[in-house]
Length: 248
Image 1 (tube, rainbow, N blue to C red):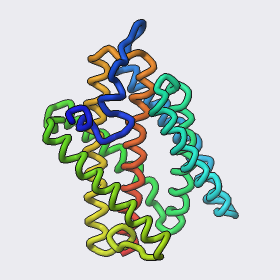
Image 2: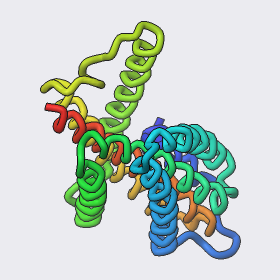
Image 3: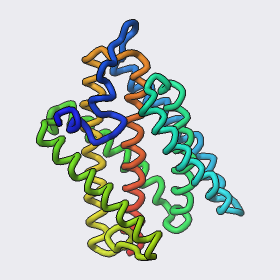
Image 4: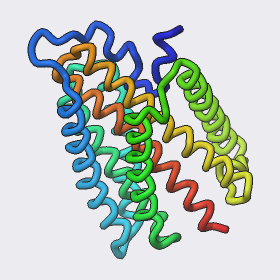
């Protein structure tokens, strides 16, 4: 039970580092930070491509790339989780594919709500900085109770989203709090953004645990990948929240 409650991010749970002990060069915090920066550059590079397509004379041209990025990113994420030693290769591929998706989604929303993309980017990095500062200064601690609460909330959100998707696909019914722009819809999205932000604290804690445990060097790429999973989720949820607010 304790190992399951380590983090709600499937890429950065305690099992991810279990048995991962370096025989040569070990994982470092600075190395993980550098790898995270490299993955961010990968995301930006491909996002710029689909962003440009979304603002071209044929904005629909970005949609196939966006869908391909989503599906390809999901598959690559699964491969990375089950084959951690491949992370130095699969993590950048994941970032490039997710960049295609994020650029397309951002461009489509930008057409409807000018300025929304830069607002979402700013809020995402601002949240990352604030949560990292809160973690480092001890304002927020990844205690067992904190982990249980965040994991329970994250799991509940995932189940609720799955139910909402099923209702939309099979019964053509859109759950108001998920898709609607009313007060309850905005409140729900704000709650999801807060939970996504709190997941960053669990990720920081898990990466630090890997560093202190002497994980092998390739786990720097894996740790950076896990952090990217949460950051991408946070960005998408902030986009959803801002679009609901702008819709009103």
